Image (cartoon, rainbow, N blue to C red; front, side, top):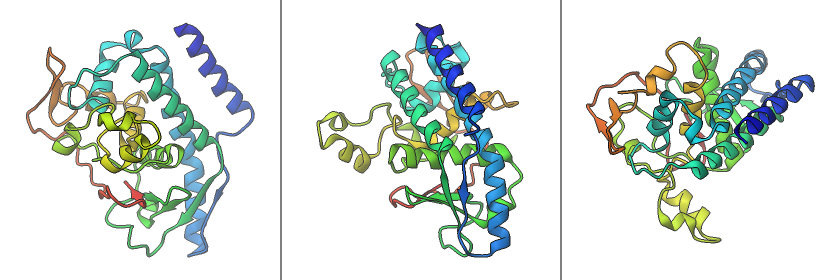
Length: 269
C-alpha cells in the first residue's frame, strides 16, 4: 500500500513535468512595468523549487507515520504537534498529505501575481501577501537572494489560496503562541457545518496552518541543514521528551524576520 502511494505520486510528478505545467502563467500588475516584468520572471523561476519542496514532503508523507524515519517523525512533531498532544496518527498524516495535493495543484495552475509597489502591506523584508485570490509581491522580493526562503514562502501563500485559510501564529523557534497549537485545534472544529467557520475564528490548529506546510516542505527538501533546524532544539529550542511533550530552552535557531499578520484576510509572511 505504501509503495503504491509513492509510485502514484511519482507518476503524478512525471506527468506534470511532461505536460510542462510546473511553471504557471504569472500575470503582473501595472505598477512599474520593468519591475513587474522582473517579478514575473523571478516567480517563474522560483515556482518549480516550491513544487519540488512539496513533492518531497508528499513522498515522505506517503510512507505513513509508521514508515517515516525518526528524523522525519521528529520534524513532523515539531511542526504539526508543537503542544505535544500525542494526537498524531496515520489518519492525520493522510489528511496532511491530502492538503499538500491541493497545494501542489494550486502551484501547477495559473498563479495570478500582482506587483505591490508602494503597498502598506509590504513592510520590512516581506516577500508576498495574498487576498486569497492573488499573490501580491513586495519590492523586497527583488532584493532577497535566498531562493529557499522565496520558495518556502510561496508555499505558505499558496496554502492560503489552496485551503482558503488564514494564518495561525507563525513558526518561530521561540514562539510560545506556536507552541500552544495542536494538530486539530478545538473540538468545536469537528462540528458539522459550523466547524470550518469556528476553525478559522479560533485558529488554534496546525492542520490548516500555512506556515506549518511551508516549513515542513523546507524540512523535507533535502537542502543542506534544512532538516536540522527542526530537530532536537529546532522548535523553540525544543526537543520531544519521552512522553511526547515539547521541552523549551528558549534558544532561537534562526531569525525569522517576516512580519506577522494573524487576523487580516490579507495574509502575509
